[in-house]
Image 1 (cartoon, one colour):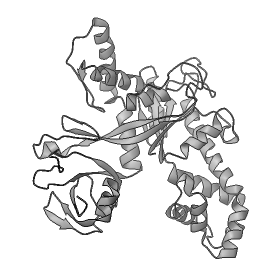
Image 2 (cartoon, one colour; image 1 turned 135 degrees about the vertical axis):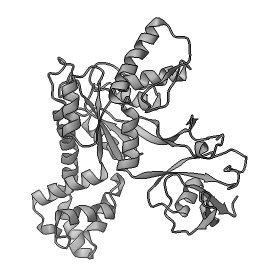
Image 3 (cartoon, one colour; image 1 turned 60 degrees about the vertical axis):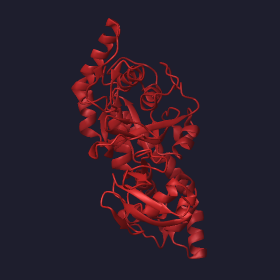
Length: 395
């Protein structure tokens, strides 16, 4: 799982999910509408090589919209979180179990300040959305701290008895929530802690270590939602004081996706405008004009910015296009640029081969950079936008 949508109840998480996936998550104006987590597929957007090479592509795993390639990734809309979730309050246990599955979090905040701490509707502007940003980070930090503090004595004994280093012991114990040895190493070194004698760490040391590890393994992008009804000053304050925050109207994005699916408008996700191509009623035109005003004011609805930032900037993923025929940019059936995959930056041709199919990797012969026409080494670091041919005896 790549992206987790988090936040307290009734801030528009399910609408954001629907805007990302054009799904059908239940939406209502009361707390805990999302009881069971919803999972789906969303898309990052990148320029497709088809435009660069004047090709007509035939995507299989996602579409290409006028030269903008939509590349699939997974997303989960988790149950709403309330203060005390790390102690099991509300749906806290389910929330924390769900975020184990996510690599990056998009925290949906009600920028209009019209929902209280527990997710109940209040007068617009009466709640400070900055408090929501702080409280969610605190809840996850407290969860991490609890996991580590209650196991610290066991870690210390294991390190002393086996001579294994702290990086291996912690990563091995918490591999289920995606913590690796490199993550532990970075946190220990950044804080200047004694990796040889973890038993001497104070409770404050353990807390600082836990929070640093959380920041590294569960980074957060903030979606300042409901900008269509929020006070401008509140939105500006959020953008000024919170890192990785984007003004968002999930409702506007969902409306645009629905209209585009009905062939009423032409709209590329993340664009600052759209074109009317179908017959619309005066009511529909009025609704779309109100949406146009929002996206022209902010440059976009903000939903796609959150997704792209989470995947490309935070998780540092790249997009690669595998082909079989380097002359025609196609697969064995003639489909042009059929697939686009997300890989970790630093991935090699063998990593791509494994992504395509285990048989391709097991029978790997060589890889070719189609852009340069040259073979590349097995340790070549694939660049975003590369078009790669994998030659394999399995084909």
